[in-house]
Length: 113
Image (cartoon, rainbow, N blue to C red; front, side, top):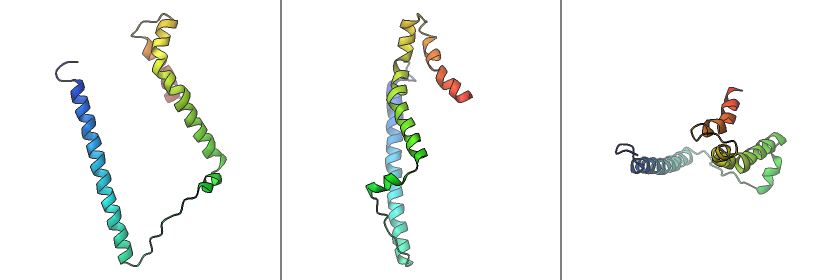
């Protein structure tokens, strides 16, 4: 790292984004409360939806297949991508500069297809 692109700068940028998100969340909460008060003043009923755990059984099969696919990706593929460059480098005797592009070939192929 050089003096202009230090880890400290990255941390401050991340901190700034977190603070912005927090302030935006507070602002949206206040805006939502204002909207509910306005609806009540105009005579509109504001009913809260009741959520029941049995409602999960009403989701169709495609939802559950997509959910299973996402869980599989997060459990198996993403951790593999974290260790894949080192594995490829050691197992196939590939240079340190070529191992990450080879490991990311799956993403490139998926984006093209």
